[in-house]
Amino acid sequence: MDRTIAMGESKAANASDLRRALAQGDAMLAGIEPILGHLLSAPDHSLFSDEIVARVRGMLADLARQVLYNQAEATGERGRDAFAERHGEALVETFQGSSALLLHCHALAIEWQLTQRLEMEAGLDPVLTPLLQKIIADSDPTASSAGMAALAAQARFAQSQRRMELPLGELPGDLFHQTLLSWRHYCGETRSEAVTRAEERLRSAYDESAGRQVLLARLLSLAGGSVGRGALLLDDAGVAIFFTALAGGSQQPRELAILSSHERQIVRMALGLHASGLGPERIDEVLLRLHPGAAPVTGLDAIGQGEARDLLLDASHRLGQG
Image 1 (tube, rainbow, N blue to C red):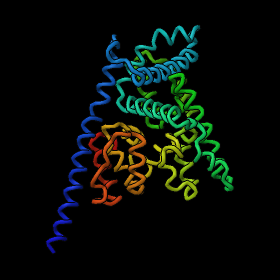
Image 2: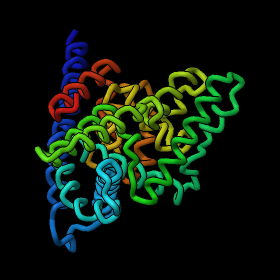
Image 3: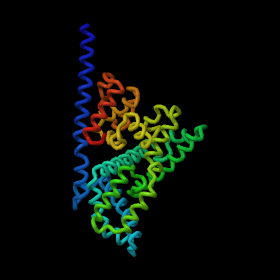
Image 4: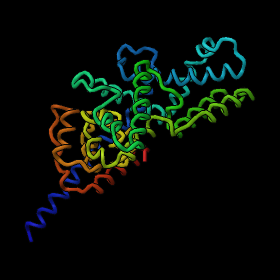
């Protein structure tokens, strides 16, 4: 009896430790977007300039350029490049006011950084990974077709990231809507009927189902059993499929799943993998692949998949991402 009670107390303590460590990670994540927004707005980046900040700013500038090109064409401006140059900086500042858009761009920049790292360290193709090859070769034409669609979407993503760009059509639906609302706010009371028509044209051309995130999620749904746990093994699945599988399995927003790859978010990553059904040895393999010098996360055996998922859900709510 005493031994049973002691074991129960030990498991409760381990779960409490995991919860405390996750809360510490939450505090770090909560500060990321305000700091990133400050860095993007700073006139002198000499102390802060790095690849992530440059890439996020590049994506925001590209979104602004696409919107302003559309506006110039709708209003009959003679030089769309000159028009975009005049208004670009101000519109980027407006876009920076959206913490959700900043978080999304930040996550994409980190995803691409890790993709490049695995290409350099392990020779993993940033587009055609072993798992994706397997799916494309599947005898089921539906799965194979989904694989080809995901392949094309990932190729577009790689090309866009190399150019520090982000096509409007690749934004998730809610962010696409927010971005156009920000543009509308930027135009203010001077917004003409032509601009309104231009917005309507952008909205009618938008198709969320053709975006990379949706195509990757659809791929995993259709491939199902033929993919198995391979989707959660970085060197087999590749970064894009890995994060999509992690987000789906742990029921986290994809952005948070990506941010959990940071060395100070190792508990969040371990909980996400556990919630997704990955076994302890495989979890350790993934953590060591991401952070070779990291210590193993203890206490996961004290909680089930459902409890791990609940911990992450609570954390998402605290961060305003639930």
